[in-house]
Amino acid sequence: MKLRDTLFPSLFLTTAVAASAFAQTHDVVILDGRVMDPETGFDQVANVGISNGWITNITTDEITGAETIDANGHVVAPGFIDLEQHGLGPWGVKVNLRDGVTTQMDFELGALNIPEWYAAREGNTQANFGTVVGQEYARMRVHDGMALEGPDVSMPLTLSVHRAEAAEDGVDGWSVTKSTLDQMNEITAILDEGLREGAIGVGSTIGYAREGITTYEMFEAQKIAAKYGRLLSSHHRFHPSASTPTETQTGVNELLVNAMVLDAPLHIHHDNDYGWWENQEKMQMAREQGYNVWASYYPWTAGSGNYGASIVAPSNWEDNMGYKIEETIFDPQLDRFVTREEFLEFAENEPGRTLIAFSPPREQWLFDWIKIPGFAVSGDGMPGLNAKGEPLTWESPYQEYAGHPRAAGTHATVLRLARENGIPLMFTLAQLSFYHAKFLGETGLKDMQVRGRMQEGMVADITIFDPEFVTEQATYSAGKNGLPSLGIPYVLVNGAVVVKDSEVMKDLYPGQPIRFPVEQGGRFEPASREQWLNTFAIDSGGARPTLIEDITDDEAWLAPSEPAPSQYASLLPRVDTGQNWFARADGFDDSELFLCRVHGVLEDRETARRDWVKAVAMRLSKTSGRTIPAAATSD
Image (cartoon, rainbow, N blue to C red; front, side, top):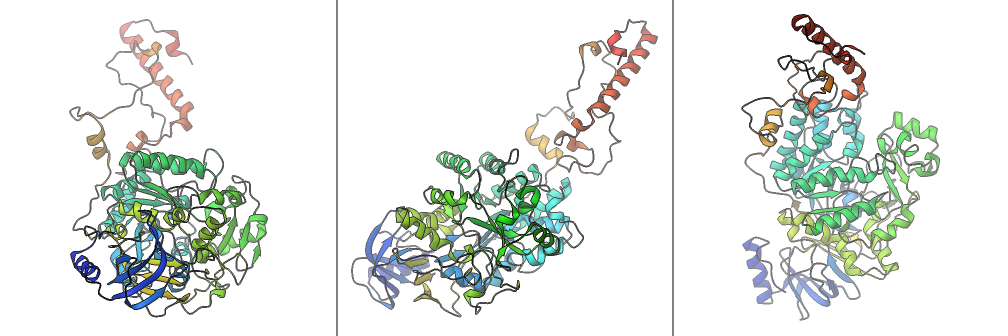
């Protein structure tokens, strides 16, 4: 196997070559394991040598090292990669390591203050870490007036702190308020700054802000990420609706069309509800055409969120989805399903409280997800809280966690389901590690071009598991929500053995930052009417484009010197707010060319038009003596 000298610095290359060529003692050796690489298909019992955090030797020859792991009867696989872990406090990182996850990131909520966020985690994190810049936080700054300073503007604080602060005045501005042109530009500028500072992409929770984020604001968010060649990673607008005209596929369509016209990367979170088959069909077809688009799933029959989320509001959950709250909404703190009255009480008084929402169709669908190419696994793990809603510490017993079991056992569950249903293990490893690494690497993210693979010259993020025994322990029952997975005795992060004999090593922090280099300047250009016309309209000497007027045959005789009737003659006088184009639909300015309010005032507009026609016709009759068609003056 060849070293990939183009994928990492020459310093590491020199070290790796020296270690391999002269058979020097390695830092760690893994002996007699079934080494499996989902990129090349390599599948062989072999020995693995690790030096300076890199895989430097895969061989059937004898090798030695300062530390030896006997992997006989076990699979030696690339460390699992997860793009949706919301509970990344010390306890959450710890339980995910027991599940084989070596790179743990939250691409849905993301973060703000990117340099501070990374600095606060470097040197004290047990798994690799990285983030996208969060659209929700940018909207909180603009629409809720929140400062959002410091290194922890991210999960797991969002539900209990940031959203609670946003709602203090009774309005979740980030969620329900449409942006003016200036506000949209301000939000996009915040995203641009995060990208400039090295964020991996843009994270969007438009599914929780579907009334506030217009399609053009969403397009602008994807556009600024595309200028850097980076992804948008999103909980899309209509997940998990099964009702027209808000089918879940419509939300994916919005983002997928944007990604394709921008030729930009796209990742869709938890595509494991109604319509997933259509989304996956389109994404496979798009990838065949060269587009870098993919989605994640998690193998559970229930999702999780909070009582204040619009997704589980009775108007959507019961009216659109057809579910009954008493049969599908489970409270992990109460350890039972809630009544509708309890749900409404919690939604009003404890909107950040965690719930578990069951989706019965998933009981069959999850057996299909484990067979879909390009469909990667992300756990969507929730914050580590106990039954009192208090955060867990690294020392907290696993039994104290009260939340969705996906925080603890997602990846082992996929391995068990694959084993029980005859799925090739190599394919499952691609879903658990390689797909995320491949698609992120194709955005130019070098940190991911050397992960998700078991090859010489790759970073030594490695998960060792028993393929015949690996399974989850976590269940929906109280006291078992956070039990760690079984059958994963060793996990290495950047060559360091972080899980040894199924125990997470304390005070060992080998996690490395996953990010892009910081750039000198941003790439943001404010949207405006002038910018749009300069790009998409012809040069007509400065004349403003006009709307085609509704002129009938009976009106065609009117003198051409007379002004045509305005389409909006019956509307309130235009207020000059300086917000021309792309603006929210609560005032009339040049945004009328993008936002249609006419249909609500057609009757008044028609009356105004007829009054104008009659007035001009009567004036022409008096001054010219011309015969006026009866239709022009009649109602």
